[in-house]
Image (cartoon, rainbow, N blue to C red; front, side, top):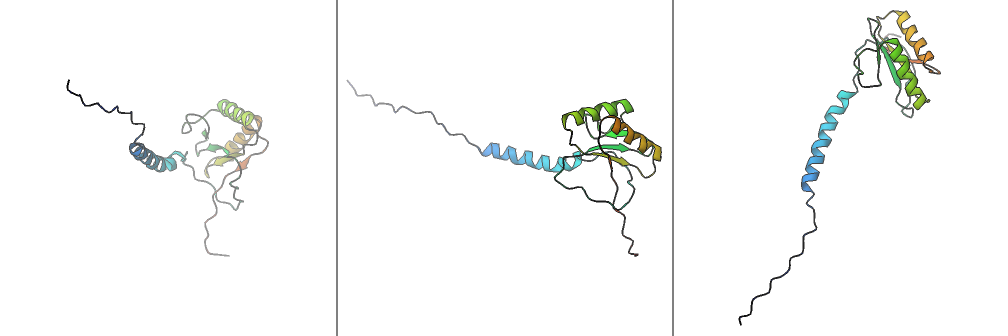
Length: 147
């Protein structure tokens, strides 16, 4: 009887090659770094210039109502931040946010060329929604070099 060589039993390899996962993560990181600044843009308005105090970084992200030159209202909350909202929808959404996070700062961005009454209406709608105080967003004045 011939002696048959015995086969070595192979154990399953329990290592995972993570190099492809690292490549995928680096690609995703680059994509998010490029697209993140694009997502923070909103409705384009020309803000009035005034001396004002800068908001601290410690506060929550503010709820911003934008009033365009033609009097449309935009809200930075919800699915369609680049579509105008009517007055009732503005009150409903702001009230919902303030019920969920009552300490959320509320701000109004009014275009330089908008009628003053439209900004006042936005502020009264925000009060109706339960905002305890409303701030106004402005640009810092350009330094003309004259004093």
